[in-house]
Length: 514
Image (cartoon, rainbow, N blue to C red; front, side):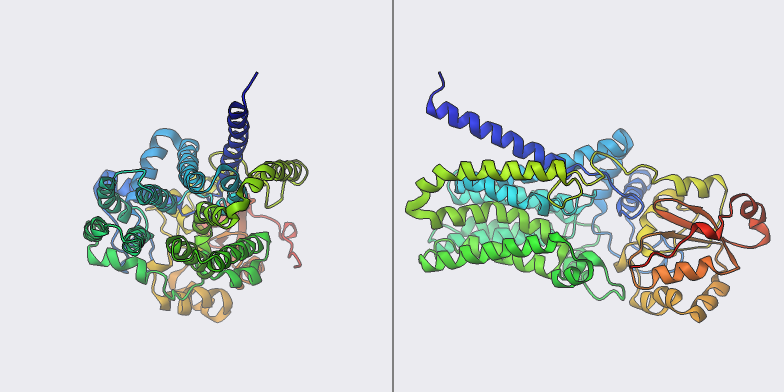
């Protein structure tokens, strides 16, 4: 017969297994390669591995090839390229899911250590859909992982679970991070904050000062030197083009809607309640570190929606810790009744997963699995098989895809790196070309475009009207369309046979009313 402690361990084991499986299911989502940045990252990696080069100009595009740019994520491209070369897209996707899961595990472990299993479990369930907001393979996955490692080490050192000597690993990690993704200053922020907390708690903070200075110095070990160090503070500028992931939460909520933003606001409300309770209990001084951290990432996510997963990761340990502290003498009662509440939540969640597969709270949203969505390579194969030449006019979203498939034979007009183009390019050329027929006609005559290659679901205000006008333009013939892209070629002598063979009838195109 099992003893009480063995029963508790068994129950925790079952609940943990369910949580981890659910976590992996949320992370394992097939990627729409047509709009992803991954294609460009793979070419970056190939360029370095074969030629030893790191792009310092926008040489992928034929419009502004000499425009100075900082490839701040160059090392991520090398890792992605080598994994893709060995394991393909499915293997690369598997490794990325593993990285995301390890990140989740690190934060969940700290949540358990600094609260208890019940509080940590509830918080983990609450944030799962939020941290899976951005599942595409991106360099920011490394930033999430490094934040998890930093927080895990620093928090355990703070609690005297690890020797302070582990701090000296961080400068080496910082050197790696600065070449992987632009969020590397967050590592410096964590070191500084934990050092400040040590000073506040009257502990020896000198090791933190030494490590912080070494970590700052290691940031300069990158191909761009000081420019690379300063890039995180200058990259989120006004590009002349509005990048959705860099917009504020309120803007995106008004523009896109959906439960994601409401979910985040509810969690922010819970954070606010927890902070107020700490202040009422006069615990804010002892838990200043946690309050600063969660408020910082709350503000960060409000300001830039791409930071929503970061808030979710830090919500897990900090909210669990805050609620555990606030429970105080009631913690035993909470521990007694919380498992029952968790069981009810899991049953409700399972019902939603089975009965509402397209629900935001379900990992099964039509693209579960590893690798890429089916058919994403068809349009590029069509272009290559039929020897369609440039110059090409494409939209912003599809640029990385074109770089992967067609570069250097065909260079894109634009790609999804707003920092790699001038503000005037977007404001005076790219956007006006789609809004104003006079500008389009002038640029079309100047460049002599041979092909228009667009992601069909471009949601910018100008894209769909532009495509409708081109479909009705006698100078252009639609020759390919699928679930992702639309390709038109110019009616000229060179394309005559291709148009005769592949031209699509106008009747298949419809304007969808919204």
